[in-house]
Length: 260
Image (cartoon, rainbow, N blue to C red; front, top):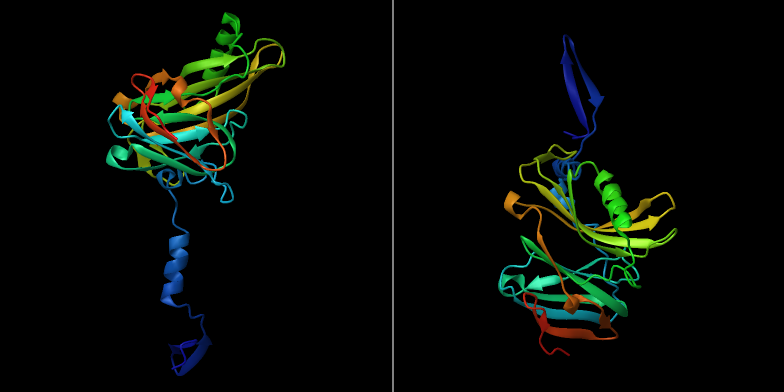
């Protein structure tokens, strides 16, 4: 029988009718494509800047201390903070890291553990001249932003006081309650977002120009707000036309072994 046709039996007659025959594998493929994608599946897919395949530069190294598993290592050029590159991690405790395809320039690194974050971000190219009033207004505008995250911690902020000038803040945004995303997937753990916030003094006060998420994950409550450490050994790493080996990093004491 031609599979494109079927028949229906009615009293006293048989009527043939045209049907649409769709192979089973096609149905399954379409069904799979229409399945909702959870936040956990998409997080990170579009968050990070793609390496430049034509750029031979990169950075590699190893976290010697603390000797515990690394969640992520990120490279950010201070003159283009919208770009965030994510390292490939390997080795014991994922403590070996490497970046490939980095355009020439200087990079600051952020190293994230479960409950501690180390960063060498250049928040301002000039001396930090923010006043106490600036800091108060910046804290107020950040706390008003992104209502989903009921807790915000400004780990470090720096900038230039005065109308039209800029400041940057390194922050953790934290949602302590369970979440359900738009696809209906339930997440029982709190959500944590590590962010760089760029602000501008617009005259009557400070305004958020943009935020750049560096990492977002679901964490246990005891790891919600990470301990913060700023260290210069993660600042201003120059990349040229080769992969720079920065050696073993002792983040706990702020030292770096000889690299190439």
